[in-house]
Length: 196
Figure (cartoon, rainbow, N blue to C red):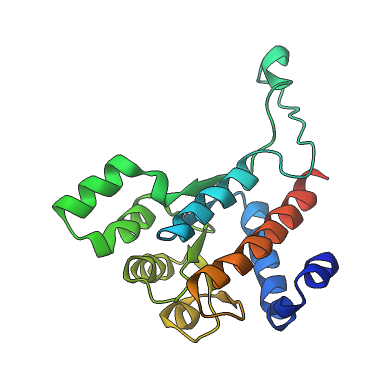
């Protein structure tokens, strides 16, 4: 945390929420659950990025010791923290958006994938993206925790989420510039807990 705040001192105002988010992520994986991520545009890319950092080695070597896997394959695998990026479900995403209701597409995916103890990371620079908010509502209805990454202003997501990291910016690209170091910290911190 110290390095994050030294490099990005403006994030000091978010320190308590970043710490709560770190605990939430670790607790999710301690319970053997998974992370679901969603967002639109650049935040959809951030969802993909987060999953990439969780599902393979980020800063640590993640040796696999599972003897069910043949040794020659095991050496080429890395330990994974289970995570799914909902924007990457393109066929289902486009079919549901076309046939049903585009504002409900992430809600449908959460309904289909989420299980007890899972965590939804809901990313929206405004905090008011309809499809992300509806996904968070469905998650909460199912007893799934919600971690939101938003901009500075109070929003629908900040009111719904168990933890909301409201970075101190309002312009979309500036919010996104702060989201990156925040989720990099969260992923590295979680990885260190399980693989370091």
